[in-house]
Length: 264
Ligand SMILES: Nc1ncnc2c1ncn2[C@@H]1O[C@H](COP(=O)(O)OP(=O)(O)OP(=O)(O)O)[C@@H](O)[C@H]1O
Image (cartoon, rainbow, N blue to C red):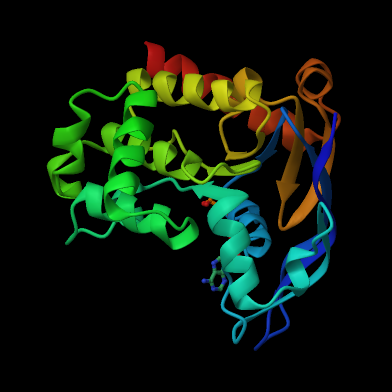
C-alpha cells in the first residue's frame, strides 16, 4: 500500500518548562488503511494529531521531528502552505462537533465558506456541492439542514455534517479524534460505517480513540501511547491476540468492561 504520511521522532514540549508532552513518536499511515492511536486520557494522542496539523501555538509549544507527506514536509511549512494542505489533503474530525461549528452562522454558509476557501467556484456551485455532500452522507432534508443553525441540530447530525465537510475538498488523510465518543450507540455505528467507507475509497485514516472496540472495527494497525510515548505497536490482530505490555492488557480489559456495561 502507498505510504501517505510518515512521522518520525515527533516530539512536542512545553516551551516554558521544557516538559515533554509527546516523545519520539513514529508511525507510517498508508492509503486505504486505518491506524489507531490508543491510550488513556492525557497520553498525548490529541497533541500528536495537533502537531501533525500544525495546530499548536508556536509561542507555547516546541515541535520537532520529521514528517513526510508525499514530497512535502508539513513540519517545516509556513502557515499559509500548511493551512492550504490541511484544508484539502489532510482533514480532521473532532470529538465535539458543537465546538467545530460557528454557532452564529447557518450550516450552509459555513459549508460554502469552507469550499470557497480552497476552490475557486461560485457561491451557487459551492452551495450545490454542499447539498450533494450532505446527501452523500445519507442525511435527510439536506436543503433544510443547510438552512439550520448548529444549535438546532443533534450531536449525531452535526458529527455527520462535519464528516461530510471533511470530505468536501477531497482529502487523502482524515484524522478522526474520538469522532464517536460523544455519540449514542446508533449514531456511533452510522459514523463508524462512514469511516469504513472512507477507508475503502483509499483514504488513510488516523483514528484517535480510547475505545479498543472502535480500533477493532476500523483499524489495521495500532500504536498504544502512554505518557507521550509509544509503548506498543503492531497490527490490530496481533495486539488483540497477544498484547505484550501490561498497560495494553489493562486498557483492553477496561474497554471490554465498558462495552459490556453499555450493552447491559
Ligand atoms: N493546552 C495545553 N497546555 C499545556 N499542556 C497541555 C495542553 N493540552 C494538553 N496538555 C498536556 O498534554 C498531555 C497530553 O494531552 P492530550 O490532549 O494529547 O491527551 P489525550 O491522550 O488526547 O487525552 P484525551 O483522551 O483526554 O483527549 C496532557 O496530559 C497535558 O499534560
